[in-house]
Image (cartoon, rainbow, N blue to C red; front, side):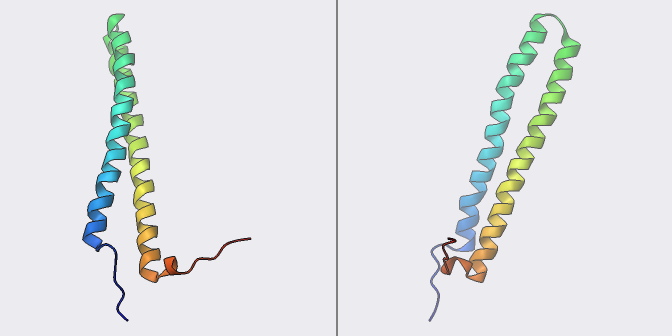
Length: 96
């Protein structure tokens, strides 16, 4: 009996990749808004060196958090794919 798949690998990739990119971009936007607030406060006070220092520090934090989120999504996708290929999803056991 031939197994019929709901989605092909290409279709799954095309569905998952935009979700991962969306999470990455959302984090950049949210932290970018806080960057704007902090940097504008420093610029308003006339302290451009401190504004530059805060900007660099906050961008590093943003990139680290965004990469961590992407790695989390990627690892979940790999685990899902491995379980799907092995057929583990066909058996369901309730832990009591």
